[in-house]
Structure formats: C-alpha cells, structure tokens
Image (cartoon, rainbow, N blue to C red; front, side, top):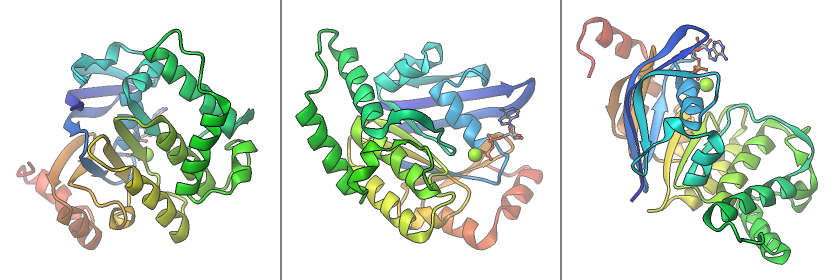
Length: 258
Ligand code: ADP
Ligand code: MG
C-alpha cells in the first residue's frame, strides 16, 4: 500500500515562511480533507508536494512509497503516482484535451516500459469516452484546447478527467469546489467518488464544508497559519461549518490546540 508521509514540513516563498511544520500521512484508500481560512498555506502545501520551483522547503521531509520525493522533479512525482488538480488550471491554447491526455498517458506508459509504443488510438478513444461519460462531459470537449475559454466548472471537470485517465495513487484536489455551481459540484464529486477505492488516496483541500457533503472524508484537518492545528473525523467539518474558525484560533491562543 502506498502512503504519502509529510513530516515537519517548513516552506518559504520569497523569503516568507508559509508552512511552519506540517505533519500528515495519507494512505491509499483514505480520503482526507484540509480546511482552513484563506491565506493559511493550503495551496502552498499542494504546490510543494508536486514540486513547484517557487516553493522552498527549508525543513522536514516528504516520502512517497518510501522515497524522498523532495529530490524529484514534478513529472517524476507524477509518474510515481502523485496527482494535483489545480485551484487555477492554466489554459494551453493549441493543445486539445485529447492530445494532452494521450501525451500524459504515453509518458506514464514509457516510464514503466521505455520500449512502449504508446497507447493505440482506438484504445485511447475508448478510455477517454468512458471517463468523459463518467464526468458527464459532452464529447466535443475532447477536441477543445485545454482550458481555453472553459467555464469554471469545465476547468474543474477537465482536472478530474485527467485524474480519471491517469489513475494516480494519491490525488490532491485544491479547491476543486471553488467557482462551481451546485450541479457542477455534484458531477465533479460523483466523478471523484466513482474513482474512490482501495487504490486511491485523496486529499481534498477546501475553504468551505459544502464539497464534503458530497465527498465524504475519513479524516478532517484544520490548517491555520501554516500548521495543522486540529484533526478529527467528518464531524469536525460540520462543526466548522456551524461555528467557523474562531474557536480553533482561541484554542491555539490558549495553548491547548492539538
Ligand atoms: P491558501 O491556499 O490557504 O489560501 P496559499 O498557500 O495560497 O493559502 O497562500 C499562503 C500565503 O502565501 C499567503 O499569504 C499568500 O499571499 C502567500 N503566497 C502564496 N503564493 C505566493 C507567491 N507565489 N508569492 C508570494 N506570496 C505567496
Ligand atoms: Mg488556495
């Protein structure tokens, strides 16, 4: 079973310390949620895990499948089975969704077997069709340029389509709910739920509890000021929805946070 182990992670960006000692373990088959106010370092954690060059790790370690991944490039991390769905996916004009995904699938196959000739087109078409149906995407979507002129909901669906096609072992979803109306949120969540299972570990990063009504987490963590200050079960998310984050802040100030 694969696990992602984060220990004492400190991260700086432009000389400002953002993460101040994060500890978290995510195993295949588990769904974790990180909630927290804006600006507390949730996206910083996601980007650092994927290896964004702007984020400097000053202390701590991140191991995936027993390997220290902090020494790996983002594409190497992806080929190991780590996936990040972006909060703000970028557009790639000139590259269609289908071509982008086929290139990604082939890179993954070649990492396993350098002799691989690439996925046969009919097999790829079948795979893509199946995953697009899962996410209730119109078939014309595959021929559009990636994220170019996509609505917020389409961008998020395109991210989950990548996840469905690449079948990662650990997936990080950074605010996949932001900018989605309730129908799009349901479709995206159903897609994630359909991919859930013993082979997939998920980290759902969110500001709002709403998405957790659809993607039920096994564990909920609260991030504040660059640290995980509270962890619990699904009830913690409901408690936060009702009472906000002030009680967590007070607990920290009184020095009794876990
Ligand atoms: P969250 O996702 O929890 O809203 P972020 O991780 O995006 O928080 O941001 C945490 C802090 O790091 C914020 O104060 C933000 O302004 C700062 N920050 C994030 N990215 C950058 C960047 N590229 N350059 C400078 N500061 C950044
Ligand atoms: Mg963020």
